[in-house]
Amino acid sequence: MAVEVPSRWCKQSRAILILCAVVGGEWLAPQVGWAQAPDPTGNCLTLDPFSSRIPPSSPATPSVPAVQTPAPADSTDRLKLPEYFPGQTINACACGCGVFDVGTSSMLPHGQGGMIWEEWDFQDQKQNRHGATRAPAADNDDKDIRTSFFTTGIQYFFNRSWGIQAEIPVVQRHFANVDNTFDWAAVGDIRLKGIYTGFSPDQSTGISFGLKLPTGEWKHEGVDRDTQIGSGSTDILLGGFYRTHLSADGNWTFFTQFAADLPVLIQDHYRPGFELDGAVGISFSGFSFQGVTIAPVGQIIGSYRSSDSGANAAQPTASGYERLLLSPGLEFDFREFTVYADVEIPVAQSYVGEQLAAPALFKLIVAFHF
Image (cartoon, rainbow, N blue to C red; front, side, top):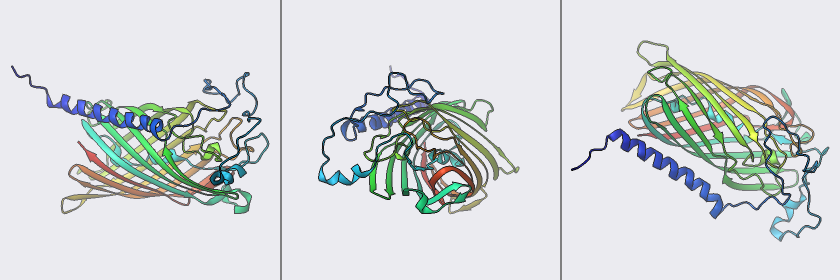
């Protein structure tokens, strides 16, 4: 006798298999091509989430081998960069990559089912800033940090209350300072989240919770910890959103989001700063052409990051900031596909120490709903 399997279970099983395959593939990638050598200092994982103190069994600074193997000819330039020592000036960059996780109304859930997407985020940090003003480029040994983030994401809602989400980034970075130029790419830090939207039948309110895993490369030779692709930390992720229609026809929509990133487990005496990003926006979906819905989006985005800490953080302190950005965008919807793009322009910002900042940030997302 044939047994009929409900279609909703087929969809859920397919989503779980896709999620496992994507996450599993990204976890295996470092093992077959991008594996990192063990930390020669033997430093252990720091378990205290609210302290940057070095464990008593560890030295005050990372240990340096007494005898170093000469570098091959093609990496001689990298050795010109100094090691980390207390009191040495190490200029930092103002990455603030978490700002890309808010201000994207098209990514909010709309019923049971799934969505898979590809996202490209870009920023070119080439303006030196100190406090609330631009500073002379000569005051900062770092000159340019140009980064493209290529993220594969999947989100699936089993019902109108519970969903899961995973984001797997691959990062390409160009870094230039007074001595050297570096160009490299690697897997970034994977983000895994659970989402709850059971507060109302229309999923207008939701919260998210999860972890950022230390899968990204954070030992690239000659590059400061704050400029590495991965943070080396395991972070707690918390977020939330709310949206509501402003007109009876549902064309005008107000939405707000926030995302918090708190590092709790760190490695090698470096603790990234706590980051909080939020967005408030309005979209209009009353335009259409040849079956394509065109929705202009306007947003105000706020971003805060505390200063890094630990023996391998920039000395003196050159991290932490507050920013306010204006972000116009456009969303295109056609059947199961969504294309979203925006630009984020800082209009007010303040940085701790000498830091490189981007004059604008860019985002492009192509999503498929199933």
